[in-house]
Amino acid sequence: MTAGRQLPLTAVDTVQATDSGFIGRKEVRADDPYLSGHFPSLTVYPGVFMIEGVQQMLELHLDGALGGIELVSVESARFSLPVLAKHEVVFDTRVTGARPLVSTSTTCTVNGQRCARIAATWRCTS
Image: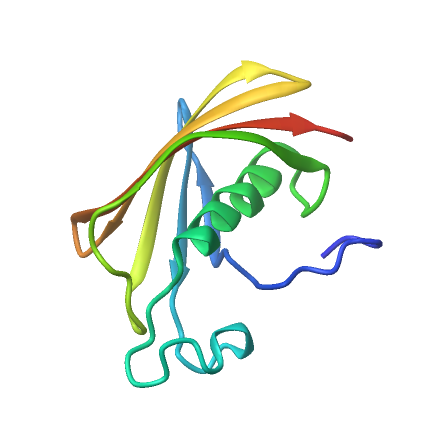
């Protein structure tokens, strides 16, 4: 976490660079404090948290630290399967463009099945 930015959630466990972007991973844990009371009988990971995951992973991929990236626009976000507690979401993200604006195209999967596709544009502020 960087000074001045209080993260509402930790949306990334690992990030690994690829030729065209990165592969990130996040295990959804029912006991994470930000999921408290969110569908208590069936913990569903909200789609907006997946967009936050792309942002945090992009920050780590580009700068090695959280902060310094802000969302400009979401061109599309399609969620096709629910992500539940104990699932590990794999974010396969292609990064294009050059600072200060970069675009991402992400396919999210759980157990090899696509659960989301997210296309977004980001501004690098650092």
